Image (cartoon, rainbow, N blue to C red):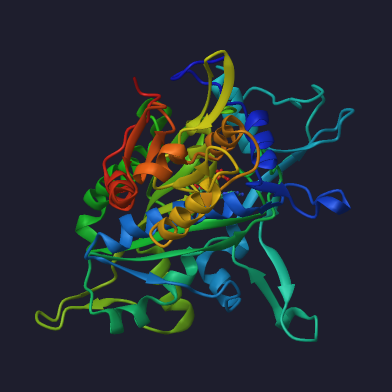
Length: 459
Ligand code: ATP
């Protein structure tokens, strides 16, 4: 049994917990499941909604220089021509010519070989069976479909592989109505689709996922300093919400890794159970996108200062995060096991603001007027914050259930409650129990929710 601070989390344990507690299920499970596609159940929806809400709060609500957007998934096909996705959104696919015939991303195999100290021109072999590999073939990751009843070249549309392009094509609209001038940004959350060659690691890499993207438009001379600022801001977002700093790092892309649009990119990586992997990319996209769309659409996409008459095409800094990957990282980082009074306890030490349920109200016993009292407290509290009421099973079992879904506080109604209108408030991490009047509960919980928080794994 692991103790606080150590890394008890494995991907298998996270997958099992997600299924056991109704966070995430395999998609279309009754038909055998669709590969690498997942459905979010109740607690999963609440957790991911909280991740997105914290992102909105940090990047829009608590800033003066950002506006929100929600663009359509289907876009004019010319978008993808101009953005370079039709031509360049490809991964190098290699196939094993040995016994297993598996397909791999050549760039991933090269990265892995380099991490193990191999020469950059060393021959790659199949990691599964050691077989020879085919020559790489470029494979376009965009899903296509058709709009309208006729399936021909003219009706071809794509499911967006990133939300970013919806922002670029709306640059002019936003500039006109939002009364912003560079530096300012547009933020968007939404689904994106990629026909990934090697999906896997649960919700880390799927073919349908949610992105949280910012395109931040700046005067060209300020691009580098804004890139630096955004790296700091985004790193802080993860650590303030509980990720242990020694499990987070920034990794700068080498010149051969850069995307077609980028002059500099750094990834924020998290130490997942399968190793360091990307959580968020921060790219300096220069004026590539606005210039391309201006050329392709014939619209002027530039900023004109009405006072000085100065005009320029803003440069763009793009912090692009995945909501599913972030939710996974928060769960992995929060997962803990410990022994309490001789019994094993699995607990998600989530930041209270991310926890799906903030407080559980539990009658100690299912009689003597306690359930009715607890239910009334619950109905009052849930107007303020997500709460749950549970009478089923022993109190210990009910607490274990709440620990596993990461509920930070538990209110217990007992015989004393009926005498003096007080309850006990239990803390998920310290297991400390405080007795307080029912009338003080709501304010106490609201205060605790707003208070700065530090992972108890950081001793
Ligand atoms: P990777 O190298 O892992 O394929 P990427 O560099 O292609 O990722 P970006 O295009 O920078 O990813 O996308 C921004 C973010 O969107 C990623 O940091 C990640 O959080 C998320 N994301 C991208 N692809 C997927 C996917 N297939 N499944 C889940 N999230 C994804």
